[in-house]
Image 1 (cartoon, one colour):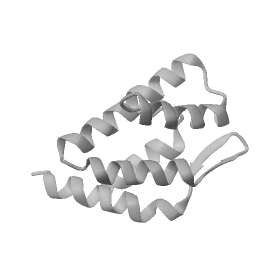
Image 2 (tube, helix red, strand yellow):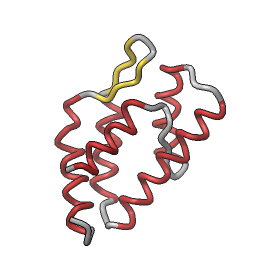
Image 3 (cartoon, one colour):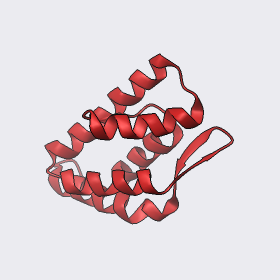
Image 4 (tube, one colour):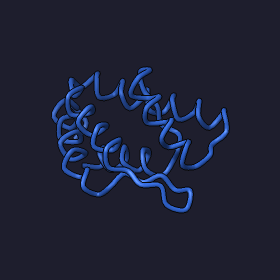
Length: 107
């Protein structure tokens, strides 16, 4: 469960989270449109999100990551220059976290 909330925190609290081209750029474009991040912050966003995608891939959780990603893209808000995914994505993040936990020897 901690992995999911860590990922959610990364996605929600920082405009610094990216992924493999399409998903990373999609997320970071939305986050940075909201927060007006610098080019460096955008690059950091891409690198962080890429890392999250790689982690999901390592544990065989690509589908769960994509579900969480799509939920965030479809259900985000920009309020006072803060990019926040909706809480309605909690189920998707929980599914991703459980998938990663199943694949990890660190429990």
